[in-house]
Length: 462
Ligand SMILES: [Zn+2]
Image (tube, rainbow, N blue to C red):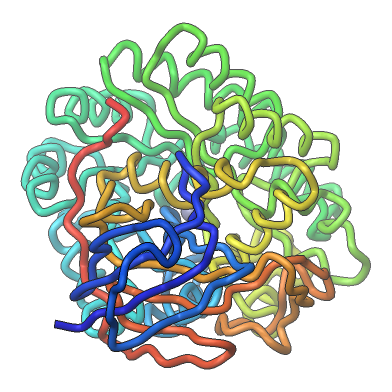
């Protein structure tokens, strides 16, 4: 039996802030006690005086190695989960992808093959359903039994991931019957495609037009439609990467009616804006993602939504493409810029900065970054909190250290940072994954293949 002791820190969970010593035995939290009150012996002791002791982050939206627009997201499961650990995230839920014409099974097997034996921290999968038909609907309960309890549909990207309203309704009915959670990319894709074509015909080819054609109203309209379809189907709904104030208003209205509707936003929508998309030259391509960045004045609504629980989760939608050679595929045509930003390493720090800035309380930081995503996707209390019996996924966090975010120092396999030069207060000091030290004082001590696949139960908010 291996025993690890973390002494003297402020233990912060979604529910409590307590000064406590934390005892870890064989990869799990064994006990918490008043500092110094127990004569625990341990093989290894971390002194956390003046530091926070928090649950490892749960990033419920990543896309390692995602094929998109003729290229692949530049982080593999190996590099991406290592970067996650550097940033204090110890669980990622990635998206397995069904290719059109193939089964869900084939897609899931392919993603298992990419991840297995390669991850530095634990991982799970959602399933992207690109082809809703009788066969795929029949496959859903089997996947649920294997711990794939959430299925993502797209109202955007016609011809690629897009499902029409009838397909969406059928998938939602199946989810309602089985307890699965439907995740939705809510943007009106067919309408956006018309605006893209018109913009390009006018010679509007720069990255900033990506933000202009993907109108906030088309996010709001799709969000509204998704809510109504889920009501008709009697299924819960989780809307991914909410970026527009108008879309958030649709979610808030649905929740005010008591509907089982949930929403996620991402750091890029909280910290970046269309100002970044409009950066000169082709620099704006670094910030091309969908839903797109919005004008700055949407940010206040998103922060408020996080405080009022109209938004429950902050994930990254980590989907990095290098500026050189990948983002450049869209030189002269913004619609060919691969959609996605890096961020899996930055999320915990940026949200701590939001605590420093007064947008969030410490406990809310842990709730939206650890506890709520774990509950939403059936991983709680194994992940997302520090309680006896929980996995010892623990971060010792120095709330006073400062750091400058930069591609020169980050560990994601991508040649730029969306937050280049930004100074943030707070930094990960030590990261444990199931009791094993992955990061300690600027050193990576983890190992490829330590990360295990997590079978998830169904959504724990229902
Ligand atoms: Zn995504």
